[in-house]
Amino acid sequence: MVPGSWDRVPHRAREAGSLLLPLTFPFSCSLPLSLNVKKINNILRKKSKFVTSQVTLPEKDQEFLFSSDGKCFFPFRYKNGIFYDCVKLKTKHKWCSLNETYQGYWKYCSEDDFAKCVFPFWYRHMIYRECTEDGDAFGKKWCSLTQHYNKDKIWKYCD
Image 1 (spheres, rainbow, N blue to C red):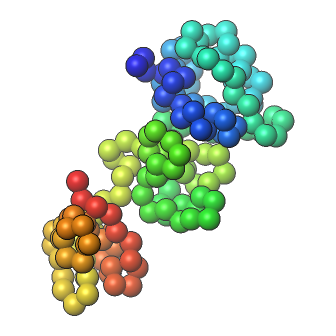
Image 2 (image 1 turned 180 degrees about the horizontal axis):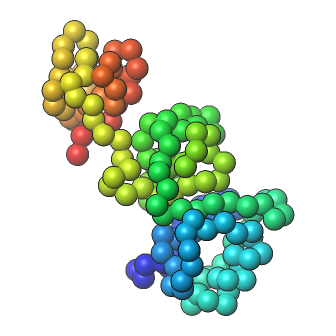
Image 3 (image 1 turned 30 degrees about the vertical axis):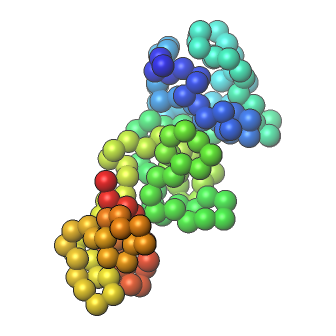
Protein backbone atom coordinates (compact mmCIF):
# COMPACT_ATOMS: atom_id res chain seq x y z
CA MET A 1 0.00 0.00 0.00
CA VAL A 2 1.28 3.47 -0.86
CA PRO A 3 1.70 5.84 2.13
CA GLY A 4 -0.93 8.54 1.97
CA SER A 5 -3.35 6.49 -0.08
CA TRP A 6 -7.04 6.92 0.58
CA ASP A 7 -7.23 3.18 1.29
CA ARG A 8 -5.61 3.87 4.68
CA VAL A 9 -8.78 5.71 5.72
CA PRO A 10 -11.17 3.23 7.33
CA HIS A 11 -14.11 2.50 5.02
CA ARG A 12 -16.60 2.84 7.86
CA ALA A 13 -15.31 6.31 8.71
CA ARG A 14 -15.76 7.45 5.12
CA GLU A 15 -19.36 6.24 5.20
CA ALA A 16 -20.04 7.94 8.53
CA GLY A 17 -18.88 11.28 7.18
CA SER A 18 -15.92 11.58 9.49
CA LEU A 19 -12.89 13.41 8.25
CA LEU A 20 -10.04 10.95 8.69
CA LEU A 21 -7.11 11.85 6.48
CA PRO A 22 -4.02 9.69 5.92
CA LEU A 23 -0.89 10.46 7.94
CA THR A 24 1.03 11.51 4.86
CA PHE A 25 -0.10 13.14 1.67
CA PRO A 26 1.31 12.62 -1.84
CA PHE A 27 1.65 16.41 -2.09
CA SER A 28 3.14 19.02 0.20
CA CYS A 29 1.13 20.76 2.87
CA SER A 30 1.80 21.93 6.37
CA LEU A 31 0.41 20.32 9.49
CA PRO A 32 -1.63 20.83 11.54
CA LEU A 33 -4.11 21.06 8.69
CA SER A 34 -7.34 22.96 9.20
CA LEU A 35 -9.56 23.12 6.15
CA ASN A 36 -13.22 23.10 5.32
CA VAL A 37 -14.77 20.29 3.29
CA LYS A 38 -14.88 22.17 -0.03
CA LYS A 39 -11.18 23.05 0.19
CA ILE A 40 -10.22 19.47 1.09
CA ASN A 41 -12.18 17.99 -1.81
CA ASN A 42 -10.66 20.51 -4.24
CA ILE A 43 -7.10 19.84 -3.07
CA LEU A 44 -7.52 16.07 -3.11
CA ARG A 45 -9.18 16.07 -6.53
CA LYS A 46 -6.44 18.23 -8.08
CA LYS A 47 -3.33 16.91 -6.34
CA SER A 48 -3.84 13.30 -5.37
CA LYS A 49 -3.91 10.38 -7.76
CA PHE A 50 -4.99 8.09 -4.90
CA VAL A 51 -8.38 9.59 -4.06
CA THR A 52 -11.31 7.32 -4.83
CA SER A 53 -14.11 9.22 -3.10
CA GLN A 54 -14.89 12.66 -1.75
CA VAL A 55 -14.84 13.82 1.84
CA THR A 56 -18.33 14.62 3.10
CA LEU A 57 -19.45 15.87 6.46
CA PRO A 58 -22.94 16.21 7.90
CA GLU A 59 -22.74 19.99 8.37
CA LYS A 60 -21.73 22.59 5.79
CA ASP A 61 -18.35 24.27 6.19
CA GLN A 62 -17.64 22.44 9.44
CA GLU A 63 -13.93 22.53 10.23
CA PHE A 64 -11.89 19.64 11.61
CA LEU A 65 -8.25 19.37 12.57
CA PHE A 66 -6.02 16.47 11.66
CA SER A 67 -2.53 16.34 13.11
CA SER A 68 0.21 13.77 12.74
CA ASP A 69 2.24 15.28 15.56
CA GLY A 70 -0.41 16.28 18.10
CA LYS A 71 -0.42 14.82 21.60
CA CYS A 72 -3.06 12.27 22.54
CA PHE A 73 -5.31 13.37 25.40
CA PHE A 74 -5.97 10.64 27.99
CA PRO A 75 -8.46 9.89 29.23
CA PHE A 76 -10.77 11.12 26.47
CA ARG A 77 -14.52 10.83 26.02
CA TYR A 78 -15.93 9.41 22.80
CA LYS A 79 -19.63 8.67 22.40
CA ASN A 80 -20.64 6.94 25.66
CA GLY A 81 -17.17 5.82 26.75
CA ILE A 82 -14.07 7.07 28.50
CA PHE A 83 -10.81 5.80 26.99
CA TYR A 84 -7.41 5.59 28.67
CA ASP A 85 -5.53 4.30 25.63
CA CYS A 86 -5.66 4.46 21.83
CA VAL A 87 -8.80 2.83 20.44
CA LYS A 88 -9.69 0.72 17.43
CA LEU A 89 -13.43 1.28 17.11
CA LYS A 90 -14.75 0.27 13.69
CA THR A 91 -11.42 1.32 12.15
CA LYS A 92 -8.37 -0.49 10.84
CA HIS A 93 -5.82 1.46 12.92
CA LYS A 94 -5.80 2.70 16.51
CA TRP A 95 -6.39 6.42 17.03
CA CYS A 96 -6.81 8.93 19.84
CA SER A 97 -8.52 12.22 20.48
CA LEU A 98 -6.47 15.41 20.74
CA ASN A 99 -8.87 16.91 23.27
CA GLU A 100 -10.71 15.74 26.39
CA THR A 101 -14.04 15.21 24.64
CA TYR A 102 -13.69 14.06 21.02
CA GLN A 103 -14.81 16.87 18.73
CA GLY A 104 -13.23 15.80 15.44
CA TYR A 105 -9.63 16.48 16.52
CA TRP A 106 -7.69 13.21 16.29
CA LYS A 107 -4.58 11.35 15.10
CA TYR A 108 -3.45 7.81 14.38
CA CYS A 109 -1.45 6.46 17.31
CA SER A 110 2.25 5.74 17.13
CA GLU A 111 4.22 3.57 19.58
CA ASP A 112 4.86 6.64 21.74
CA ASP A 113 1.13 7.30 22.16
CA PHE A 114 0.00 4.01 23.67
CA ALA A 115 -0.67 3.94 27.40
CA LYS A 116 2.27 2.84 29.54
CA CYS A 117 2.10 0.40 32.43
CA VAL A 118 2.60 1.99 35.85
CA PHE A 119 4.93 0.11 38.20
CA PRO A 120 4.67 -0.62 41.00
CA PHE A 121 0.88 -0.99 41.22
CA TRP A 122 -1.47 -2.38 43.88
CA TYR A 123 -3.75 -5.28 42.93
CA ARG A 124 -5.81 -6.89 45.65
CA HIS A 125 -3.36 -6.99 48.59
CA MET A 126 -0.11 -7.20 46.65
CA ILE A 127 2.33 -4.83 44.99
CA TYR A 128 3.35 -5.77 41.43
CA ARG A 129 6.55 -4.57 39.78
CA GLU A 130 5.92 -6.26 36.43
CA CYS A 131 3.04 -7.56 34.32
CA THR A 132 1.04 -10.34 35.94
CA GLU A 133 -1.37 -13.12 34.95
CA ASP A 134 -3.08 -13.00 38.36
CA GLY A 135 -6.82 -12.52 38.08
CA ASP A 136 -6.99 -12.88 34.30
CA ALA A 137 -9.43 -15.56 33.13
CA PHE A 138 -7.36 -16.24 29.99
CA GLY A 139 -3.96 -16.36 31.69
CA LYS A 140 -2.71 -13.33 29.75
CA LYS A 141 -0.28 -10.87 31.31
CA TRP A 142 -1.68 -7.45 32.15
CA CYS A 143 -0.73 -4.31 34.06
CA SER A 144 -2.39 -1.35 35.69
CA LEU A 145 -2.35 2.10 34.10
CA THR A 146 -2.43 3.70 37.56
CA GLN A 147 -0.70 2.88 40.84
CA HIS A 148 -3.96 1.83 42.51
CA TYR A 149 -5.70 -0.76 40.35
CA ASN A 150 -8.05 -1.66 43.21
CA LYS A 151 -9.47 1.86 43.20
CA ASP A 152 -9.23 2.88 39.52
CA LYS A 153 -9.66 -0.47 37.69
CA ILE A 154 -7.81 0.84 34.62
CA TRP A 155 -5.57 -1.73 32.91
CA LYS A 156 -4.26 -3.12 29.63
CA TYR A 157 -2.75 -6.36 28.37
CA CYS A 158 1.03 -6.37 28.18
CA ASP A 159 2.77 -6.85 24.84
